[in-house]
Length: 285
Length: 210
Image 1 (cartoon, rainbow over the protein chains, first blue to last red):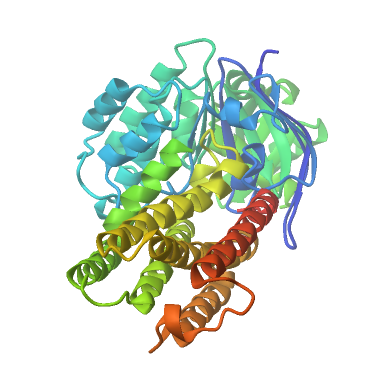
Image 2 (image 1 turned 180 degrees about the vertical axis):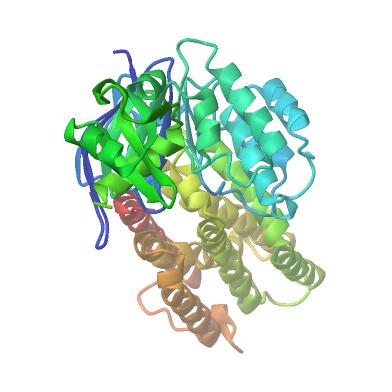
């Protein structure tokens, strides 16, 4: 079993939203970024994987174990930072550490103290007096202090200022130095994902529209700039995924290999470009 | 489970400090009036006050989104649901034993101590027994009415029963040989309801999506 996470046909239906048969595989030792617009279903995917909400269909395997059984044991090896860390406002970081010491078999109190120190979290300040960023940091400290093999992070870097975000991203990178350790991270901040992710998964309206190695994506796609006639020629060859027409020309996301020679200027693409153009293409815009 | 109880007791001492002070004051009053006859209404009020603590903490759990966060921790849903029942039993037993010991100091006999223990313990477990499955099934916000109604019911019934009476003298317990036997039977019945509630609570919690 080389998958940290494997979902097959995962379904969750709400009145106004459905997660439709999600097949997602996160290999061990890999960092996967889950990207999607608001309401795309990122949190639903994470909550369903962790059985915080019950799935309506499909299966979930975590660290090689069926999540329908032994989920408690599996969670010993999973660190989770939800979009809102649910710790009581009256508790302080020291007390949270005491609680977690009785919760995780492999709780590392020294590591926790180091993380608190590195993240600038006062141990005796009450949680409700923390800023949003500090609350996220405490969640991160807990997630990293029990020798987890899998980190699941739901918007974990949101609310952090750029300097701290960079430090936290570096912590996640350290975590994945162990080849057995994997990370699933959802975020709106694509630049963070671009820095640390090996794989990128795009979620749109509850469907997985793309899931590939980041480097492969950056190789596969390009930005094509040119006049309308050049873009139309590339489109005729099936190269265009999505486009944006402006006053001074057209910019399009294109399949690098399919772009005919002499058909506009080819530029490097970013993950954010791929996501925006793909979603717009999927919306029929 | 130990981590969950540690968290709940932290919150008990931090969030409900005022209630614990009231209970301590009741205890002091009872201790200071060893020469008088036992005040059963005071004992009942103490039990019902203790009884609302675990349910109150659960409502705080939902408010702070601990209920969701705790599902990311290595606890089964059964353990998460059970922690409040276990806390109820610990609180009930500790405070019931403390107040029963006053009766022993009063030298009013083991029967009277058993009566007080039954009274405090029964009052302490009934709030959890009657409201927790609703809180687990429908959420704290939706089941708040049930929580309040149960408290008013327990408190109202208890107060109307004990107000201005001497339990040992004024009630005709019929076929039951003594108020002690009656109270122990009530305790047994309350405990059976509590255990049934515990099972239902776990089922409700397992079905719940957060």
